[in-house]
Length: 233
Image 1 (spheres, rainbow, N blue to C red):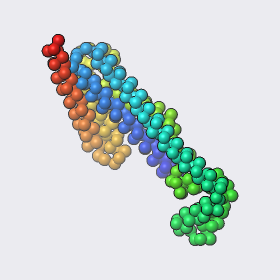
Image 2: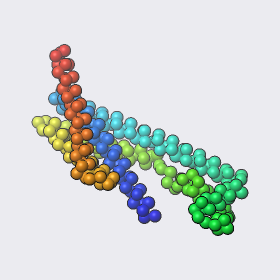
Image 3: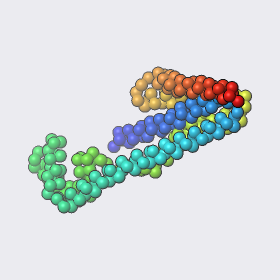
Image 4: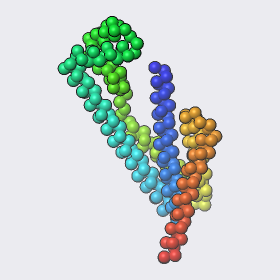
């Protein structure tokens, strides 16, 4: 029980860090791309804010649909299992007996356990869901909670590159955005590395290189587009 709780918290933390990192890398690249094409802080802030909102809502909608669809599938499997328990209890009891024999119980022990479980249909359904379908009926996942956490994590990450522009630090906005984003990439990479058992320093450096490369490429493209547009004007 304790192990499952720890694993669940670890998975939640990993998902939160990954969501924040997605927001950070995508919006950092966007901000750097726009900053490469223009020095107008209002344009950069507008683009960064739009990227934050678009990405966050997109992530939330995708997560909601994904979890909702998965939950619908699981609930349908549980409904079918419930019908089978009601309509063909003997077959379901035999299924329980086979499950417990496969776990090493004797034929008599399996029959006795299955009979006791079948006395309570709710307990029998819960047991069949776990043993036959591999589902935990109490842990099917909340679409709203998944969408909300995805939205919040993305906003946290995507907000970091635009903070210097939002507070109006005219001369240092670009440099501070790069510095803050770089530090955030290092932190996210280090945390993810620790959660997955990889060397934290290597994980942090890898994340910084990947995110920094993406931002550098978009910045270069932005500069190129800015030059072209300027010449056309």
